[in-house]
Image 1 (cartoon, rainbow over the protein chains, first blue to last red):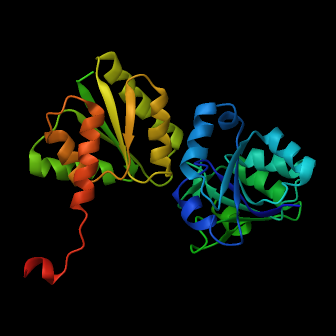
Image 2: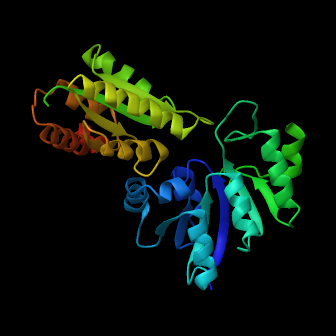
Image 3: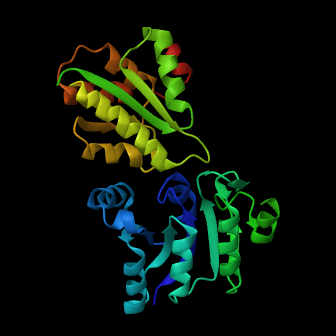
Length: 162
Length: 136
C-alpha cells in the first residue's frame, strides 16, 4: 500500500517550489499531477514527465477519475506520493471518493476578481472559503503554506481575512 | 526561416530586466521580448501572452526562439509548451547575459548552430576566479 505524503492545491502544478522543497524528504518517490486538462493533453503530459522525472522521483499524470481508480486498484502500490491538484473542487472530489486525505495544503491559487490573498501565493474567494470549510468539516486539516520553511496559516486564520 | 524573434520567459522581472541590461552593452534591440510571471499571477495568462507573441511572429514569417530561466519551473513549462506551436523549434534554458549577447551579436543563419555557439560561450564564461587568475 502506498503512502500519501502531501496533498497540495497549486494551479501551477509542478514548478520550482514543489520540486526543490516539497518533493525532498519523507521518502517521496512519486509525484502525481491530477488534472483532467493536462491528462488529456499528451504534449503537456510529456513536458511534465520529461522535465521533472529523475531516478528518485516518478512523475505520473492522471485525470481525477483516473487517480481515484488507481487508488481503488492497489492504493498507489509502493509509491510514497505527493498529489498535486489545480483546484479546491478537484481536491474535494478526491476526498469524497474515499482516498484517505488527512491534511490539505493550499499552496498556489492565482488572483481572480473578488479574491483576497491569504498568503502571497494564494488568492481566495468567499466561495473558495466555503468549499474549504466543507473539507475541514470532514476532519481534514486545511492549511496554507508556500514551501515547508515558510509560515503555515490555518484555515481559521485565512477565513478571518476574507 | 532566418528571420527570428527572441522571447525570454522568466520568474518575475528577471527576463525583462535582463534584456535592458543586455541593451546597456549592445544597444537597443528590436527583436527581443520579455515576459515575466509575478507572484500571484496566473500561468495560463502567461501562456496566453506567449502564444499571442509566437503567433504574431509566425504570421510575419519569423521564427521565435524561446529562452527560460530554470528547467522545470512554470516559465519553462510555458516555454516547452510553445514547442507545439508553428514557428518555435528551440527552447534554451538558463538564460543569462552572455547567452543573449552571443545570440544577438552573431550573424549565424542556422538557429541550432547559433544556440549551440551561445551555449558553448556560456559554458566558457562560467569561471571560478581567485588571486592566482590575476597574478600568474
